Length: 392
Image 1 (cartoon, rainbow, N blue to C red):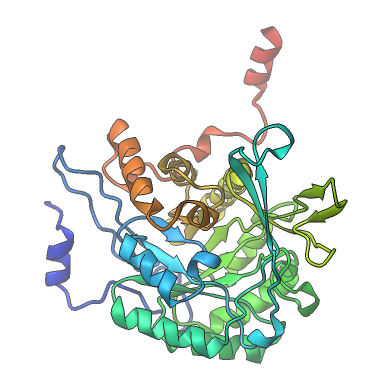
Image 2 (cartoon, helix red, strand yellow; image 1 turned 90 degrees about the horizontal axis):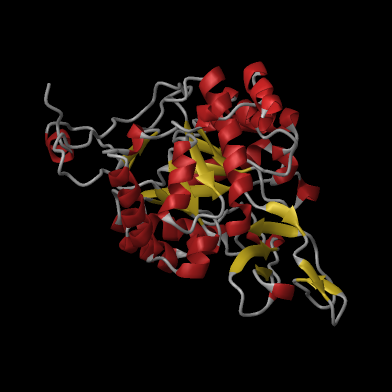
């Protein structure tokens, strides 16, 4: 049977494919229609994907952080062609958030971190959005009015309080956002209030909070995982079993960027003091790949991984970087630090490089190669391979 193209699908249906609202309890069967690639051998590779009912022109997503901090920058992201945008994390009371300056530090390749060396590591001690929630909600509405078919994802984080979580979900959903990403992973996300990684590192707490969220939300929910834990599959498993449609991994890695050998103070330094922050950029990419692979294998063995989604995050600056995440099972690939370094136009290069990779292997769609590399790794060597190494 000949496959329908996207225009035919839309013209023959009254259904909106921008988001698959989930009535009542969320069920893993709420999966959107997959857009099929053209049968033509000469056709360009098709980067479009449908994840949890969310239709995107490509798998590249702005990761939550400074690149999604306000209307102006999110609008630019959509104009440049990003597949989706995850806004900077919001909570009910922005007054409790104080973002300091300076809040970034960089690690460069080369001897003694030469100022001329390539940036390979990036640390931040930035908190969630310090803008009033009402302002962010107004801008979400403006964006959805201007771009009704673009995918806007609200990132949320709240204190250990069921009523607060429910209110926050109600308020962001009223703006028309397409999905929610729950920040269970910020390494410096006000742990004294049981926020951020303080929840993501405690599976009992995570199960309870995920239960609140998923009983309330009517749009797909992604739980963002912390890498600062022994086994990242444990919280990922809890999040999925508690009703989340997907997981995102990884958030930044707890770190101290370095010490200024002149002042003897840690960096970044604010009025003589610093604090451990979140590490990102190219240097974390191999770590992120390992975490994503572990989650993908768990999802395949314990869940129907076609019914859930996985968003890979960490050190993406090229189409090849993105291909690696997809080969290990990711549906989408988020970029945050890369946008801060290279600008919003980076998505055009990412798309072209990913297409080049697909052409090289004759892949016509993302699903043609998603996850095909994850089974080429083993947790333990087989007896035969061990004997072969001994013989050598």
